[in-house]
Length: 506
Image (tube, rainbow, N blue to C red):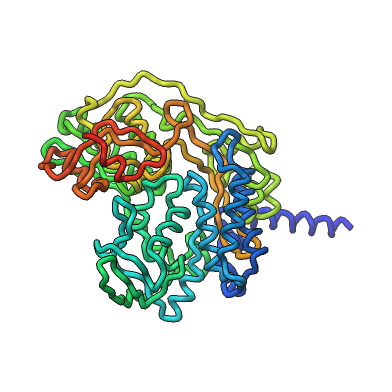
């Protein structure tokens, strides 16, 4: 009996040690692509409706109390309307398009559906081709291909495509749609059901047919460390500092914690150059920066402000059983009762989950405004932003603006100032698609919930009435800007699109 007990204890110890090792690498089916039978399956209306309902219910249960959400009766009507438009036997691709629409009902880019790469890869293996022409949206809402107005693609109305795209990508923030159209047109057309050859009818009565470019295999973003993903490629440092004629240009593509040591060295060198008088002006380029590790932006902000400065006004956190269940695929069962799960998730307030009853919302890291001692006069710091500036990069830009450390130049950010975060992943039971739902909400650095994107101090508009953030560096350097309208101190207005902001007096 004693020997048996020893074997049991030894087995449990081995299980625990193995669990500790496995806990360092996310594992389980939630990390991998869906099984092939789910990719090739078809789904009846009841199954599709159930998946869409789970998206709405999960988001509603997880986000902190007080978060603005669409009315449940409206959501139910939208779900029914979406399912009514699906074929009687919908493909996983059909369900993915409907799910994309569903997550588009929420204001945060942190509520999203992971693109169904399995379907894309299946089409690529069959020799599928993707659209390789430039798509954009005019200021009056028309679809352009190679700058020519379009009426139909493969016989389907271009106007209908734009209506669908608005629901899935820009329903609550119309500023996002033109940028999404420019950046992700091949994926959007594919998900909507447009395949090669692409037969296009233009508004001027002419027609054309495009074969497109061969589709390439994709790697699932949550499968990057799976056995089939191959060796991980060495990462490139995503920021750089250039100094010329006492002007420093800091370009930050993302705030990547893997390069924290290099980042701290760069910020120290920048501070030394400023204090020694070798740098008189600073341009921080955050265009295209989707965010990353908040502590990196705090390090830069503290240097600019002369004192430690918060990048947000705190975090509202809701403890949810769904949140913990959603992460269960990341942690071996034996460790879920101990502190390991919380350590794996990180130190950004996660450990506080233990002190919050299930379903309750708490505020962590409240805001206290410090007195700043700027290292450079406000007029000598410019921060460049655009519609692809998001998450912690958005918070950095907003903090620079709030503490009057510099001016923001470019276009409104794609994300709101108050953003949701702390993501858990979930598999929809029928389609096996993965979507993400947050469990925390950041407050604006002012300490208040705010609506809308971060607005630049100087909004740039081109001759066509669209944002011209690509010219922000020229404006910051004082170059010739005759063709660019500069609108000072624009104000966020719900429902405004590019044409509305650019029509304002400068």
